[in-house]
Amino acid sequence: MGLLWGFVALLLLPAPARNSAGNRVANGSFAHDAAGWKASETDSNSETGRVAWSRVDATGAKGSGSLDLVTSASADRNSYRIGQCVPIEPGVENLIFGGRVRVPPGQRARGVANVEIERFESTDCSGPVVPFDGLGGIANADFWASRQEIVAAATARSVRLVASVTKFYEWKEGDEIGETDDGNSFRAAFDDLFVKVLEKNPPAEREPLPAEPDRFTAAAAPPKKVRWGANLVEPPLLSLAVRDSEGHPQPAGVVAECSSLSAVQLEVNLKKPYSDDDPRSYPLEPVTIAGEGGLGPRPTVEVGLFVAGDRQRRLVPISCSVGPPVEVKILGDRNQRVGGIRAFYDCLRSSLPADARARVAERLSDEDLLGWTLAGSIVANPAGEYEIVARYRALESGFWHEPVLSNPVRIRIAGKEPCPPPAASH
Image (cartoon, rainbow, N blue to C red; front, top):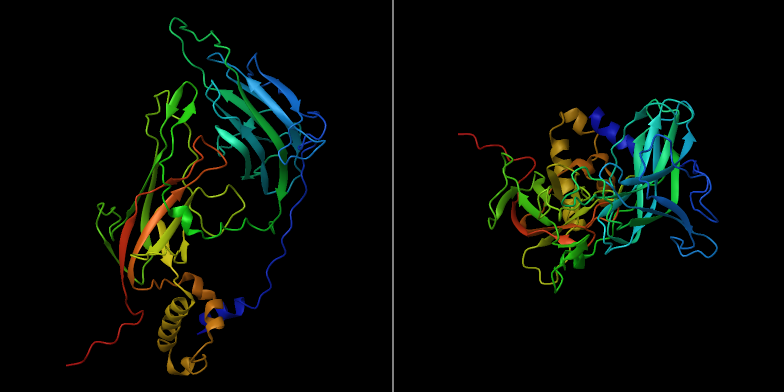
């Protein structure tokens, strides 16, 4: 009983204040020029790389601009990087960094553009770099990709924010040591670059994407091939399967039997149609599942659930974990959700000793049940048959940015009581 009311009391606590510090980077929006951004002596930059200020602004603002980076490549010098050093005071725990990047599609050279961060224990970005593996580069982005990532400050006393372009070197017959540059440049534009201290009470999270059933409907025409350097490439493949009680994926075409009291476990896989050593192989932003928003990169995969046979294709409200495996709780409509939570509340109350049960409300209002602290952890999937589809779309890194739908899967939810009736005595 004390545990129950302890959770209820948590509902009365005010939400923590949210705030964030300002941008630590100077001239991150490149209003008039590229001042403050330069190459490091430790960078092994391409000799053909160059930087220029452009009048094209990411938001279309007149009188402002962006940063334009260009490079070509030989085998050992295929990147061009410029950056800015930012001091970090002691006590900072986490940083948030990013910016906007545009990579014109259809370039003759394969390559990626990236916004990276390097951490140093020195105060002037000298000495060894504390590595950080971020989202990776972006290519084929005929739009301004908005990126942001979170990194632990660790023991860093300075960081270097880096904008970079990397051309994938194309080996030529007879060029055994990779000294021949084909002269096909790769270029990208950068704007609104930033580094901020992530306060202990962080800024508001990104809002989850609104539910739109049309996003899970296949287009009339399949995705077209896209140019990647000298090649036309096929889209990636997104596969979806329901896991059984032992964690194995169910065979395709099988209606998976699931319980109303357990989250539905899904296996989501994204695969390129080419091997890594194939010149048609391209980078992909990894699968991350849309849940409750977030401060870091936007999730790349969302899951849609429909009542089987619903011709109107209305999305059923669900809640997803990030996985793997991805766990889906079916919330249903308000009446279904309230009914499921009430069954658990009644079950929990009935399990208390008589004296404790007398001090717990016999019946809560619908609003109180939905606001109950334990409500978010309750699995009460409404019984019925459903269809599930996953949708991949990556807009912050990788090469493929058009939507990709998975195969649909079917599940059948069997309704079960949270408190089974006692067995009859003989």
